[in-house]
Image (tube, rainbow over all chains, first blue to last red; front, side, top):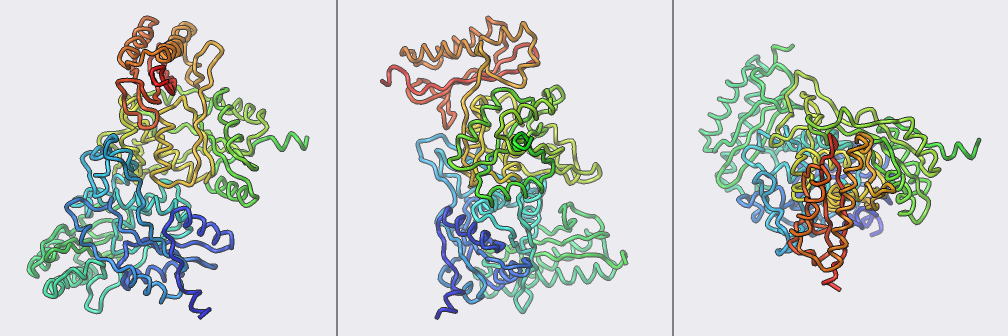
Length: 320
Length: 320
């Protein structure tokens, strides 16, 4: 019983308590590693936990945050249907044996009163699910202005503003030494790296590899919302990315050709393509030729679910 | 000699060295208090140092940062003529006997290379003296979107974006427990308070009262750029504010009347008014009647120098 209790994560709901906990761990000589999530955890998330442990040379206290962040959803998006299973999440995290605390605040934002001045929509018409709060509500936003454009930023204009802001808040509450992000959300990972660099957060950012189902589908909390049929069709994403990489490694480095092939594969499978882009890995600038380290990024709808995936290409055969 | 050496501030130019220094002081049980400045220090700045000491109940290590922040200046503004006197600043800080470190980084921003993708002007056309850097340069901005509008934000659209961003950076480098801002820059102080609240910085913000010359002129590093004649004319600012407060305390609480009177006084003295506004103290929302705690804010040009000043009014006679 005593040994099992050591692995049961402490559940912390309060910001001040979280910070106190974190500072205590550091005073004990431990690094604090944060894994931010929105819950409904799968093997992909658990791989982030492993990466958090691996990133620290010495003793580490791993904190997993579970918070469904309203400011990264537009009112038209799927905040209301985003899946959750807190009890299941806790069981999975306890089973890892290495998660010391779960931070699950009921809310992270200051909400306003309806009679106060409105902060809604002052950001060039950008409005998220947070911003009907009005009054003296939250009004501070962190924006990574170049990287937040393009890719997912084109069809989700509030998304990265909400992500960067909530991550900055989590960083200030948890005060981690290390934070781990999945490379499935490739643009998000690059944006967080840039924010940390530009705002001088004293935090090492770890990008963790995509975890896939046995059939190749990239793990996502949203996969549960796919019908059986759409899930089969969605396999075209990972299949087309692997084919593209094979083609690239065989010397086919014209981005447009590769993109056309992926769009055709996804469309024939019944998907509705949001974008297929080939960009430089760090700057996310589109490349015409894949003659340097780049990444192929895809977003496509299958049924009512928007899925994203990507594959990094370090070099093509013409480089070697 | 030994006693004097204790009071000589340590000069730190490197971010990592600054953070290490700060963490050592906290490990010694001291609070770290930050006074951010742009140098050319006067009695007003030194009063911020005193406020930093006063704000901490226990032992405190006071850090004064000196950094002329290019991102809060528009290319049309006075970055190039902003006065500086580093040796004099150091002498003044040493003479206080309570400043432990001076943080004076040569640069705080990552600059890009000209051949990289440009980050300039993506923020709705907002461009500061930083943004000709291009390339993989700094591109992350903190904006307090409602409070940054109005008052100085109207005529200086890049200003508060630059202030909030550089202060967030200084907070992440110095990791202070307390930070002190002068209430002369009233909107700036409120914006920093809001940023700290919204982004969950674990920092107590102290607003420190305006320090004035014997004749009433609010102390400012820019005062040195006033001609003798303009300096005389500029006394109309503090005089008109004191008169306005007297009028308000005597029951004259119509904002428009008070504002008209101030504009008239400044104009007759030869000033060019940028704005005269009466706003709520925390929300900075304009008030028609001064029937709650408010502040009268003024910006006006005298010669080539733009000066700001303000006066808080806690209650008018009609409240009592």
